[in-house]
Image (cartoon, rainbow over all chains, first blue to last red):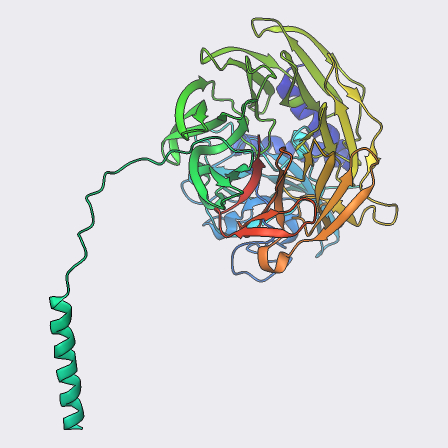
Length: 173
Length: 384
């Protein structure tokens, strides 16, 4: 099996454990759409501060706070503090086409959502609002669950700038 | 007031006259600009890797003397490198990435060799643009036991590794490790990789650095419920891998294939799930005295990267905890990395989230020195 196939097989298996077939298909469709629209890869340069470095107060509904609910396994500088948003890259950067997938609980509707942690690439570190959370994060040998690697690795411009958390769909149990 | 001022004025004038009359000391001699020499390598030098979180294209290694508490110099390491020491301790090897125009432009991946007696770069090997850019660990780039081969982990995200000749400075080949990652060398010609299934893949090389055979072990840990940290800690005959919940998986690499010892636990039944190992470099082993030092914290699931608030010490023969030291997180911050030297009068080093480097007595846990602000984010400590 081609190594790349293994990576995506692993991602698919992880998703299957957490989702129904219908939601899995829906999520995969969104992923494929996202792959078509976005650049291909996610990576994270691995950071380990415990809270956001910015001035935002802890708030599970504030995209500039490390406690924002959809950042439950993000590791990096929050793009929402760097000219982007929780799901958009700052101007002049390039989204990573590859990424890793997590599942976060939204306290506002009590649903679990599948999110894609993409990196935004091609400029040096944003340096603001560093955030490291690790719900269900796994070490590098389980790459599809790992937030330690530079997901800009496959970009033409591979420097890491910041990270986003893009909702892919509801994780139905 | 006037008479008083007059007296002061007179005294000042007198003093000035006396000063001008005093012979001047000889002028300072002319100086010659020189470069400091390091002298003999010391087992008490520690190589402090700084992730330089705010400017990650500019990571570096600081060399620090644990006896004199002097900062001896620096090695530049580029963007998200792997770093390691040669078996003889004389070389710091760096597998890294540079961009042609600072933060952008053409990517060049390269292995650089630095002489630890001068801190000068002595050579390089240009790699394919596949170097595994990840957080610091000792299994990103590493030497064979006889230093004839050098291995560099690749990730594109397909996993493989490069086999390099560190003497001729050439790339000998690339070996696919599908489903497994990183390079854990043992012996002169074996490389193990950690697999997502909880197994170890072992690739054996021929004399030319090409794959001769490969074998996969049975699972030795549970990657779903209790994963191991990838920061293996060197033991007398192999490596110890700590799990998120505090199990110790010792792997004997002294033979031709890895042998797995029964796992044992850092925590009691009451502590399990509440006290956990964590940080970036989770522990260190003093091999002569058989002591394991672990960065521990209180936390639940998902806290495996939380920094340590205590150091727990274990006897590797009895598996008993022999000490438990609270770390002064108020003054120093929590622990990001631990290392201990391997000589008979060892030093224990702890790097912190505030970028301090604490030198400790490994017998008592007492701090001998705190070096403030050794960088931005010291996440890995290396010792020969």
